[in-house]
Length: 343
Ligand code: KG4
Ligand code: ZN
Image (cartoon, rainbow, N blue to C red; front, side):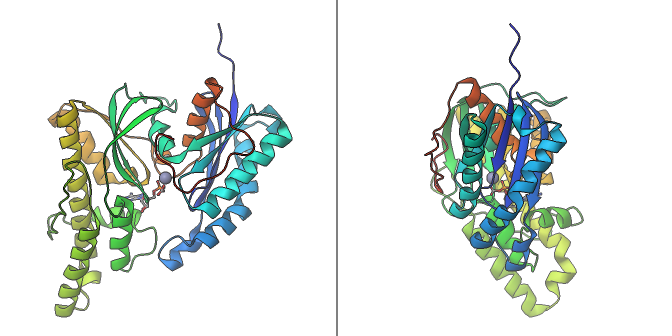
């Protein structure tokens, strides 16, 4: 029997990116992301400004997604949206929009967990990309989360370890702030690190009692004290050594992440290893993980750049799976800022 063709409009608005995508079954037809530049000046996301920008962006972004996909809203079979976790004001914009449009078009509404979507982005159908087989481990690293997950099927996510304080994205962004770089600093550290020596400076790696847990707040303090000490000796220290500092910070973070993944693989015996989330765009993480295919015999799954940072295509793939299970939501579904990965 031939599979029915489904078109899903998906909407992501959990933080500071307004995104809309159209999927035809598990294939992405369009994936439009409007970044909010306004937060750069404040050194971090300002929730009130984020929700206002979502309100301005959402209609044009959805319009563009439809145009790029070459369909109209009357071709849609369902609307998927991010229910949480995220910033409440931001989530409300996407949620209200999705609900209104689903009522107007009289098509199903599907709520999606943002963290599941980061992981399941691996199942978006792409040329030359094979999705991981179950079970696999996923290192989910974003601005708000740092988790090692064991995934045994599409809706079973077991948290094996997670951060006890800052998320890894925050570690990148806060380090960047100490260096005077604008928000989000993660991609800039990555950029400057390419030109620097990663063994130039050493930072102590924080310890945690849980073998697979992470801690990044100590690292931020270590970097702060290091910079203060060096700047006393040389006020131009940061400017003159920016590339080496970035390379050393990045290398320390990547080491922390990779050691924990090796431990997780050893404990579980699983060698199918995926990464997900905004920080998985980082080039050293991607290169290091890839190199473990040869040295450790891992099968690694590294998503396309556009599916790493927040985007609606990842919401759409979860929407598609839920559509197949007829797992629909009512109009009274509420956005929620906190949401466990299995909810
Ligand atoms: O998944 P995401 O887009 O949003 C959240 O759900 O948090 O992740 C954003 C995070 C930010 O902290 C940003 O600095 C970081 O991902 N990031 C990077 C890179 N690209 C984005 N961190 C390091 N290297 C990168 N290339
Ligand atoms: Zn995210």
